[in-house]
Image (cartoon, rainbow, N blue to C red; front, side, top):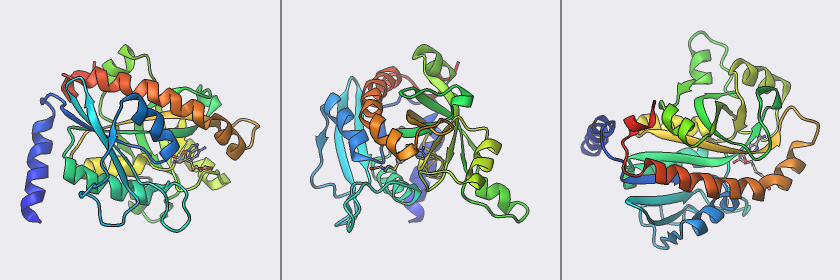
Amino acid sequence: MAGSDDVVAEKGGERASDVIKTVMVVIAMQAEALPLVETLQLVEDEQATIFPKGAPWKKYSGDLDALNVHVVIPGKDKSLGVDSVGTVPASLLTYAAGVALQPDLIINAGTAGGFQAKGANIGDVYIATEFANHDRRIPIPVFDKYGVGTMEAIPAGKLIKDLKLKEGKLSTGNSLDMTLQDEEHIKANDATVKDMEGAALAYVADLLAIPLISLKAVTDIVDGNKPTVEEFLENMSMAASALSRTVPLVLKYVSGKSVADLSS
Ligand code: SAH
């Protein structure tokens, strides 16, 4: 194990000036991923020997320009058949696929709730500038900060400007709804968008020393007057098609560039 750890650390150190060649896109829900898989004409790797035997995880691969693109999804829960959303499946998948594929860049693409008080509208695609958790409350000095786990995104000012993306902080928790306590913490995190995976991806990407870009399409307005579940289901396919337009734009943009080229 020590040997493979060394390889990861060494590669991470080299990455900043390297041209991006391999990108891994991590998506929580199949319905969010399939329009993109179709747009990019990726092919499912039915064998996927990089995954544990019997895991519901899926990998779709192909090329876009000079890029090697892999889309990975945690698939359907083995007993309940619904998408394996949330931080645990997303973290395990990102770790295992990240170690196996050694991408130069990870993109987390998905949907999110947006705060209209912060300027979010349905269908907007946000790039996260910061990640934090809102449901890890540990009221002991220092552990409290660990719980929130704030992490900065990689500087990507040039990418944001050139592709006219909206930018905002992302707060993550394992619930789709929002309790009053969550709301308090989301406000403290100064978040514009709220999801169920982003901060976990940031943690794993940092662990593997692989740069991460998080793209979130807004399916529901959290501080609006429509019930979240209803609004989410109503806008899910529109958000998935927004992602299937934006993710290829980002992929084409990063192709032939280094991570350092993405900041202004
Ligand atoms: N009702 C859905 C369940 C989706 S769970 C279904 O029928 O399949 C929500 C997914 O969308 C998660 O992956 C999460 O990251 C994202 N998401 C969208 N809106 C969200 C919100 N308001 N809060 C938290 N996560 C949200």
